[in-house]
Image 1 (cartoon, helix red, strand yellow):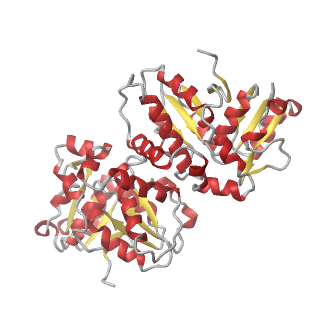
Image 2 (image 1 turned 30 degrees about the horizontal axis):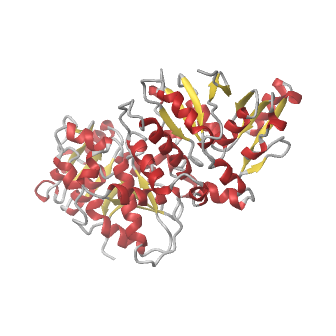
Image 3 (image 1 turned 90 degrees about the horizontal axis):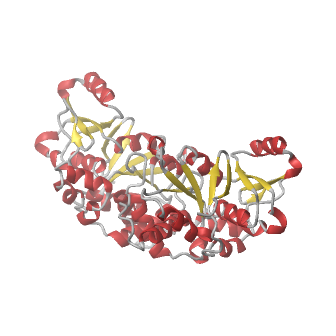
Amino acid sequence: MTPAELPPGELDGRTVVVIDVLRATSSIVEALASGARSIYPVASVEDALRLAQALGRDDVLLCGERKCLPIDGFDLGNSPREFTPEKVSSKTLVMSTTNGTAAVSTAAAADRVLIASFLNIGAVAEELARSDQPPIILCAGRERQFALEDAVCAGELVRRLLEDGAHDWVLNDGALAARELTRRFGVDAEMFAITAAGQLIVDAGLGEDLAFCARHDRHSVVPVLRDRHLMLAPAA
Amino acid sequence: MTPAELPPGELDGRTVVVIDVLRATSSIVEALASGARSIYPVASVEDALRLAQALGRDDVLLCGERKCLPIDGFDLGNSPREFTPEKVSSKTLVMSTTNGTAAVSTAAAADRVLIASFLNIGAVAEELARSDQPPIILCAGRERQFALEDAVCAGELVRRLLEDGAHDWVLNDGALAARELTRRFGVDAEMFAITAAGQLIVDAGLGEDLAFCARHDRHSVVPVLRDRHLMLAPAA
């Protein structure tokens, strides 16, 4: 339910799926589907500026948010609607968000790190179903706390992973709970609107992002972490 | 949902309710209701032995568990069924458990720390309802991870706190989710049996603890933390 729950000693050989559906992993999926070459998730604004300098500032788009809003001097915010092919095609992105990029860093010790949101949930489920080993689904949460929208997305991923009956994976308490939360709260923008993260986004004047992030299976891409950056998995 | 989510800067003036329903907070409630004078929660076996020595080993009952089972050289385990008046009346207890005592330590920076389980959930709800300020409900979880039984107990506490309509407290995402999990999973020993903690307790041959911990409102006591030990709140 939160990055602090990831068992550090148990990541060897494992696949971790990171979910920060409002909005970092939705933006990552949208950006890569729109043709961005790769995305470097970084923790701080300073790290982002330093890395952009090292990579060549003119070749990089700086993006991210603090308190939902774009960062001064950055090229893009953290609204997935911004990551259009016109803006990001063939570009390298350096991204700093409050919760999502920290979750990716926490997961980086795993063998494989995938990025999921509703926008690509079917593609991620298909990719995970190819393995005999159950994935670890990591919700980014919000400021180290449980975030309902991430749990609901995780629960939908659990449902899709198990629906064909091909795997007899045992669900831990978090997965059992997430699946029920998905049944109860549904997987649409109305669910987002009752969450703390959703309310902050609406208050920031970015309410249209909720409907965008609630779109299911808009893309069939699976972002993966390679070294320190995210890019699309080669087609299977 | 887990101790790591407790916001350290926001505990001033707040009441934190700690829940580790399988089994530390159930045992704490049972022990104090059975007449134990006070309970010192400690992190490690070494801390427990050192404190027992300092308090006078003969005046203290050492209790707790590792991997569900009693600790070598300790007087009692962590099964609430053990904490009978015959065994604990007027005694001082030093208790070390895997998750519950760590959660109490994390909460200790708050103004007030209360202990809840199903055994005393009504009394805790009544006590909390006297305040105008919403409590923080802290689930101990299991090995730093989400534990379904704690969330379900938290959700039942939320339901009872709001049912009389006297408070218009805003629920955070965790409280919204917990309330729904309680509706979905129910609040009986069958719910416990599907959780990871419940299964470990059954596997350890202590399955009767599940039915015991599921008893609602068996006691009308509210354990509180005073300095470093837990005791009963004076009647209001």
